[in-house]
Image (cartoon, rainbow, N blue to C red):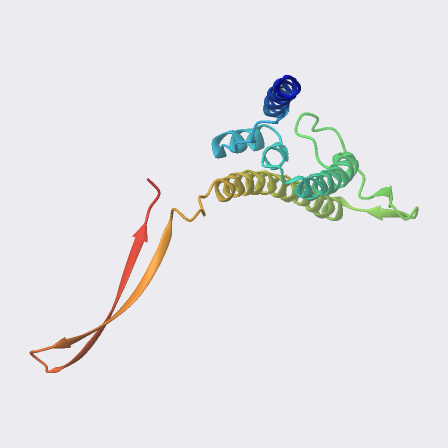
Length: 202
């Protein structure tokens, strides 16, 4: 009978050993295939946002902010281009009706016919053209300032978001509030107090 038991014991031990080896190989394979945890560094996020708007948000894995950043800069770019094109257009007409220091003999016309965006032509003098020209130039410059502010806001947002994502909110940092009631022999009354204890991560 024991001759039948020994092979079964040997087979059982071998199968258990093979199962252990397979489990170890699977665990090692999972460890190798496991992706390393993405560590966010605020300085890297800030530098990437300085290089190009939206790179810091992508580094922070806040992909939902990318359409907002792109939409802001595309809109501001379109507004700046709109004002730049019209500034160049009306500047050329303003040059026609303006005096020229390099050519004193040039006699500018009192008005010049300008075709507006609606397709109608209007006669404008030098003062009207100067006012229109200055308005488009001012709006263009304000748009450039807005793009700079949006760029700075993009950098600040990436930096703050990176700091918030790396902020430690584990149980190793905790606050305990403990009220205390004690008898004061001098005043012969009960004195209440409150103690705050912080536990910091080691």
